[in-house]
Structure formats: C-alpha cells, structure tokens
Image (cartoon, rainbow, N blue to C red; front, side, top):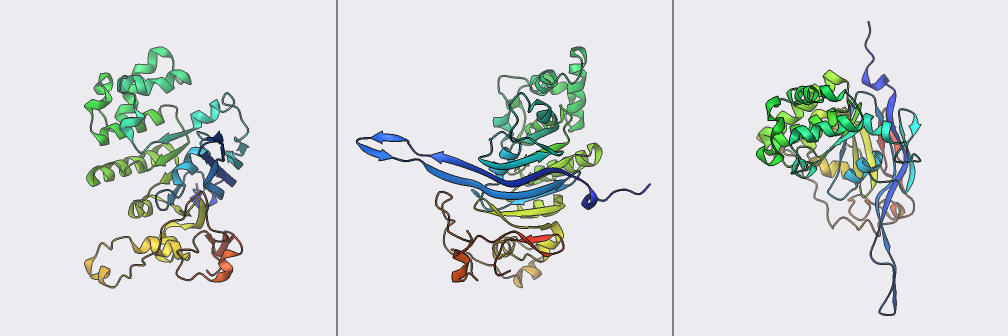
Length: 334
C-alpha cells in the first residue's frame, strides 16, 4: 500500500489574515489631560497552512509574535481579526463551550514547565485533570492511564504522587508533555519547549517529540529561536518579523537558499559546526533596533534595517508570493 507523503496531506490548520492586537496604556482623562490607548500589533495579517502529520517551525527574534501566533491559533487569545480553521471548521467564532471538542484535539506545551504545573498538585493529579474534564476514561481507570502516560514520556509511573518541585527541568517538561497527551490530541503547539533546558536534555526532549509524532501521528507547530533545532525537527519553516511572515518554505530549501534579506541575516548567525567552514561564512550584521510593534514602519516592516531597501519599499506592504515551488517570500526586491 502506497503511503501518502506529508506534502500531499490535507491541511489540519489554516490561518487566514490572522491578526492579534493588544491595547496598552490608560484610557480616559487624568489630571485634565486625555490619555489614549495604543495598539500593539503582535500578529498582523498572517496566512499559514499546516498539513496533517507535519511539523511547521516558526522562527524569528524575540517579540516578533511567534508565541502570540500560537496562543491565538489555539484561541487562548481571541483573534482581533481573521480566521482560524481547524479540520475545516472556523473556530474563531465559537464560544468557550463550543470550543470544548477542539480543546481535546489541540494542546500546547509551554516554555516554562515549572510555571505550567500547579505546585500544590501532585503530577498524577495534574495529568488526571484533563482526563476527568473530558471524561476520556472511566474514573476507575484514571490511575492506570496516568501511569501509562508517564511511561510513554519516559518517566517512572510510581512518581505520580510526587510534586513538581521534586523533579528536574527536563522531567517537568516530560510531565507537561504527558498532560498534553492525556486528551489524545492530534495537534500540539510547542512553544519554545526546550529553551529553558540544558543542551543534553534538549536533545532528549526533541527525540521524545519526534518519537511521539511517529507513534501517534501528531502534527506540531514548533516555535523556537534556536535555528538549528528548528532545522532538525521541522518539515517546513515560517520566518516572522514584527508580526508578519516574511518567508515560508520547506526546511532544507530555506536553510540552504534563504531569499528574504531578514532570513539571510538570521541564518547567517547560526554557528557552523565545522570550524573550517566557519572561516568562509559571512555574518550579516543588521543595523538599528527592531521597530516598535505599536508604530511599525510603513510598507515593508523590515525596510528600516534592510541592507537592500529602496525608497519604494515604504510605499506598499509586500505580499507573500511564491518565487519558487513551495517557497514564498514577502519582499519587493527578492
């Protein structure tokens, strides 16, 4: 029987012109002076599709909107505008009660595992909570299921009566993964799940996530600032800058031949594993600071730091267009 490749799979998630803006500052009149709220454009018009069974990596500098994108996709933050389709259904208009079936299918692994676990609950209680909320298994079978989940992530099942502070950072992350798996999801947002861990532990968690994907048929949105890890685990990669996706391609093509000036600068910062190759590698240093998402530049948002920008880059926002097969770039000059 011929297997369907990932590129032929149907989309499990589709984002259409997704926006998430936050209002900051005070509103009203203070000391006789009117004060207006300002808007942070954290995610501003993102179009993405994630195929069933693949891993889509999202990279970019801190503050570019990666995590907000994941939270808005999961409806942990409600979208300001745009639509999120999950398995063909528009979930942006659903009430919290109507979202309950979606909550079972889509989960998240947070960056800070210690903060994601209730210190007053044993890890067995934390893992069993979603089992009870969604009534996954009969009450009498909950303990057995908790033990199975702990074994699945490489933990001793007899640890279920211990508290989070009794475990290392890597063990806590395994517990968070076990809790996410409790509801038998098909899609998981991995929000920088290894950034707080030692390098040796990072490799273990990445291997675990890959094994779980193979065994359970999971789909990942993998958010990270570690470009080497993203290349290893991702089938496709989307590069974000100041709330927008500026380039999207399959992993190997993007890393071997980035077309957007920001992607080129970002990837030039990745250390070469071979010192001999590092001598021939040219580092692209971007000048200036990242503009404020409260008042982003007109036209192309990267133009104020772009080494090839021209005056016309300020006139219109570049569309994400396909320059090569399955390789999309938002740049007037690419």
